[in-house]
Amino acid sequence: MRTTPVRWGIYAALGVLAAMAILAAVGSRTATLRRLVVQTLADRLDSHVELGAFSVDIFPNVRVTGAGLVIRHLNRQDVPPLVSVDTFTIDGGLFGLWTRPRRFRTATLTGLRINIPPGGFKKRQRSDVEASGKGATPPGAPPAPEDASASAAIVVDRLVAERAALVLIPRRAGKEPKIFDIHRLTMEPLGRGKVMAYEATLTNPLPKGLIETVGTFGPWHRGDPGGTPLTGRYTFDDVDLSTVKGIGGHLTSTGNFEGQLDRISVTGETRTPDFFLKVSGHPVPLHTKFEAVVDGTDGDTYLNAVSGTFLRTSLTSRGAVLGADGVKGRTVKVHVKIEDGRIEDVLRLAVRSEQPLMVGRLALHADMDLPAGPADVMDRLGIAGEMAVRSVRFTDGSAQQKLSNMSERARGLDPDESTESVASDLRAKFTLARGVVTVGDASFAMPGANLQMAGTYGLFSEMIQFDGTVRMKATISEAAGGGVKGFFLKAVDPLFRKKGAGAVLPIRVRGTRKDPKFGLDVKKVF
Image 1 (cartoon, one colour):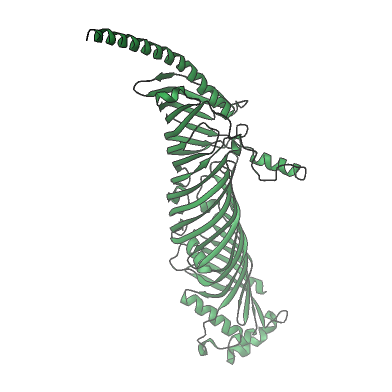
Image 2 (cartoon, one colour):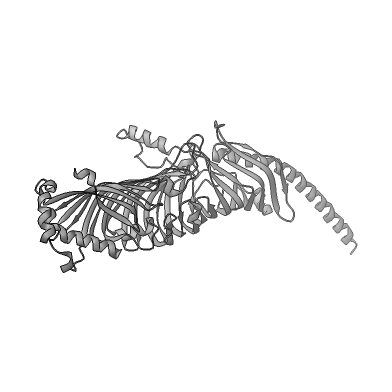
């Protein structure tokens, strides 16, 4: 029993000595860890690293805290830092502090900002083409990855960042960067130079919506961040298309992607149950499937194949969505093709009236150009193409009756003795600019007659201005229906008979969509 106080005294002395040793070790470890953090980040990211405050606590668990972390590209002073972090905390066990590599459970970041510079995708494309056939890497192939077996000084099992930002720095001078607000990001493991799993929730700036994605990232390519491998799947939900001027609706998109940061292959689909152009305001259900390549360093998208359906019409397209110098937004250039659609579906999208002007089977191919800028979509949209509409019938009963009467008279028949509702075929070249459709070389064929027309139609004003000719099978006197009136008109038949036709009449159409006025262009007769 007498030895008990002595024994406790020895234990206490040893405890004090152990504590002093640990405190001394912690002081040494703080400097060592600071150096290792800077060294690891510099080596892994091939960058210059700056670190402000840094401290290490070991009771009750190891906790490393820091602030003012800035990671800059080597030899790149023309772009913002690759990564900046306001504050960070790294948690782990005491055993992990003495292992090799040093191991921690979690790193928590606040104020994370990742700036992705313009990558080498287009530059590598050119060099690959120039070097093809000379033992070079095949065009489109990613550069060789980092050595995944390389040792790491520090390993973190899980990284968590909230309220962060991903910034894509544009390649073009004067172009604003594209910023994605990241609500939450997790990655694991961190620091081994291997593939990392990630989960992220972020907001797409335009059109505005929430993206949730999971996948893999890495290993990091130090010399060319744009060559870093990336895979995953995504959900783009609750997308408000009205954030793009001139269109509206609520879109949901899902898909998969793989590749590298500056060349990401994406396959997916979109569903918009209420898509509309504001020029008409008529919602239609729109469904698309697409294959695209995205340059993740600046957001340029190359549409390899897009198929879409709305109402009873299907279309295909291909093209690109590209940034523009000195202008906010992106320029869209696509070629659109409709093989067997419905003209009434297209008119419902583009024309304000509740009832489309005509119905019929539509074939169309056109080049669409939507320049970047803040103006309404319909003020910026330009389209040039050709279309053919078969079995055309006008939805307005009066207009269709006038057309049927014209067809009857053009064949020398009496409209009063026939109730036939004729169908026509329309072919035309057209352009759309600033909300005005200009039609040229339009051919409108019906039984007994053919109309050649050219003119304009205003999508906003609904004003019509067309001029052309009607080539009829019947003569003027035959079209008048015979009788006394037809007898006297025989005298003018030679005036209108041209190139084998019974009669060729110059006509003009003026007015509005609701009240078109058809008339003979008397000046052209003589």
